[in-house]
Image (cartoon, rainbow, N blue to C red; front, side):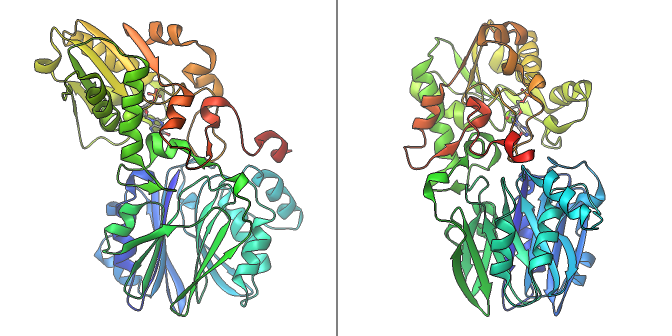
Length: 450
Ligand code: 5GP
Ligand code: MG
């Protein structure tokens, strides 16, 4: 998972890109970078948060009227400085910089072929394959053609911000797995993963980049091209709405907050349990718990206090660290919990670490009963399209039925929303990829990687 942004303006864009990236920080905390065009392409990147990597002095060196940025959350490729983005390369047509969100399913095959041709890769990320292919096809004149040729070879999930020495290009794969939005501020254009990045610089939301669309911003104008307009292939990632995107993101016509509140309501209808209080698991469970409380009539209260200075515990490398991480991050509020029958609401269970730890500490805080309600179905299958789900064997729901999970995590009862329930919160607007829940992969990851 990652966040990307691209800004096109008459003025210096480094600050805009910085603020936009900052507002996409939830999409990746591992590394970040900015590239700008001022006659030539300059860039700066590093490990850590946006505010750590960029100070006034770095931004000063990044002058230019076009810029792209990236925040990274490692999926393909390890956590290493060389894997940070934007990737910048030199080709016949001049320098190209790319920022990629998503995951290719056939990058190994393509990489091998490129290596046969004598290329030496500098990173272990799939995005470098995209850069090499673009460099192969771009001769300095027709970037859209180079993008189309690249798209004919790469398979999987990709939202891209591409910058050449004269233009900004935004691309979304034909399935539309990852989001990409367009905004406008006077004569300026911005493309970004989520609305927050557009709002923060005072631009107006225009629309989504459509699946299969190539948006070219050049000479102050925006033009649209299509690699493919096969709407049957659309399969936007439903996990963006379940967990990943911020509440204020509207992706493909559905606002994440509304979706989450609604799945909470639907879940309360599907699996009501009588209790004294509905408690969200901060922050990802807030909206679902609001919906559950509204629909069930059971009061909503803050029963867990979150330490705002702890990052995401999910990505810690070892199980022990993840467990300590949960304790450090969330502490029960005894005054709310003691003697109560608690309904705990979270957005998802992946390994089961969070729920197990929380239920233990809520019981210690004196809860009479703990009922866990999850606003997504059980995550049973790995994601090959950019969500950081661990190997199948690590997914608690891949090998355990719901009652067994309930026993493992120590809840009095456990219910997940049904797949149909979750889908109904999308109001039939689109088709979604829900492979992590149902194993129905829109692109076969096995066939493609042979
Ligand atoms: P578990 O502890 O069961 O492994 O993970 C579930 C918790 O992690 C939930 O609170 C959920 O909000 C969060 N979560 C689910 N998927 C992801 C992900 O891809 N990345 C991160 N950072 N957190 C996730
Ligand atoms: Mg969470």
